[in-house]
Image (cartoon, rainbow over all chains, first blue to last red; front, side, top):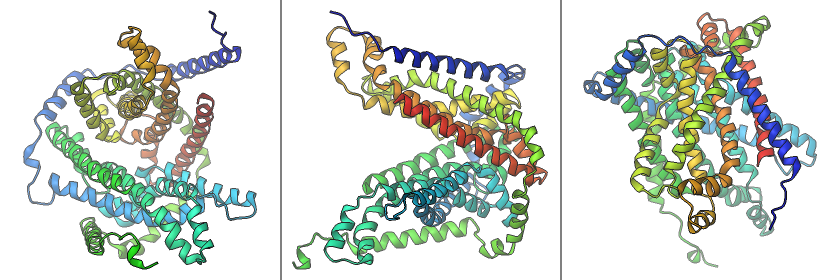
Length: 268
Length: 260
C-alpha cells in the first residue's frame, strides 16, 4: 500500500518558514554581547540563595506600618481600588470599541469601533511605570499614584475584554423582550444586563489578579506598596530581606488568585 | 401567570451583605492608599505640563533610540526562545495525560506556580545584581518569565488533546517517547507556535521596561529621559514602542492564521 505524496506547496511553505526563522535568529544573536559575567557572580548567587532560604522573619510584623504585612495590605488595596475605578472608566471605552450591528452604514461603524480599538491598544502599550511616574509628579510619591496608574493602565485590557463580551452577546433575549412588547429600558434590564454583568465581573476579577502583580512592582519607582522596600533591599544586597518579601508576594498572589478564581467559577 | 410560579431569585439579604462588604473594602482601600482627590485636582496643572511636553515629541531623538529598540527586540526573541525550549519538556512532564504520576505532576506544578508569581521586574533586578548591567540580565529574566507563561499554556493544550492516538500507540506497543512523538506533538504543534508568538508579543511589551532597572534595551533610555524630565524624549520612546507593538501584533496575527 502506498501513502499519497505530500502536497508540494506545503514543503515550500515549511522551507520558507525555516529560512525566515534562521534569519531572525541569526540577526538576534549577532549583536548581543554575551561576554562580561561578573567574576563575583557565583558569590552573589550563593548569598542570594542563602538569603532566600533564611528569610528575615523579624520583618513580617513590627507594628510601625513599615512591615511586610502592612505593605502587602497596601498593595492589595492599590490593586483593588485601581481595578474598581478602571472598571467604571472602561465602560464607555468598551461601548466605543465594540462593533455595533445597529449602525446602518457599515463603513462608518467600522471606522468608529476601529478607532476605539486603536486607542485601547495605545493605552495597553503605554508603560505602566511611565504612567506611575507621571502621576507621582502630580500627586506626589505614594500609594495614590499607584492607584491612578493601575486604574488608567487597566482600561486598555479591561475595555477590550468588555467590548468582546458586548460583540459576542446573544441578540435573542433582546428580540424576545421587544416582541413581547418591552421598551428599551426593559431590553436593558431584562436582556442586556443579565448577559453582560456576570462576564464583566469575571473579567474584572481576572484583571484584579493581574493588578495585584503589577501593584507589587510599581513601588519600585515610588508608587507605594511592597515594591519600595523590595528595590531598597535588592540595591542594598540584603538578601534575607528580599527572601521574606518574595515569600510574602508569592503567598499574597497565590491567595488572591485562589479567592478570585473560585469567585469566577461561581459566576460562569 | 402569578409571580409565585417564577423561580426564586437570590436572597436579598445575602446580596445586601455582599454589597455592604464591597463598599467597606472600597472605603478601606481608599483610606489605606491615602486617596486625596483635592490634591489630584489642585496639582493637575503639573500633569498638564508633562502632557504639554509629551505632545511635542523631540523627533531628533528618534535616531538615538533605534539601536536600543532593536536590542529590545533581540532580547525578546532570545528570551522567548530559551523559555520555550525549557518549557516544552516541562509541559510534557506536568501534563496528567502524558505522565501519569500524580506526585511528579503536583510537585512540578507547584514549582511552576511559584515561578509564575515572581514579577518580571523583580527577576530583572536580581539578575542585574548577578550578571551586571546589560541585556544578558534582561534575557535571563525574560526567559524565566516566558518559561512560566508558556509552560502553563502548553500543558493546558496538551491536556485537551484527543486520547485516541495515545491509546493506539500504546496498543501497538509504543513507549513513552513514541507516544510523545507520534500522538501528542502532531496534535499540539500548531498551538505551540501560536502560543510562542503570543508570549513573544507579551515579552516585547515587558522588555521595554526591564531596562528601567538596568537590564538593557530601550528601557535604559526611558529611565534616562524620565529622570532628566525630558518628557518630549519619553514621548518618542512611547510612540516607537507603540509602533513596534502594532507591527508585531500584525505580523504574528498573520503568521498565526497561516499556521492554524
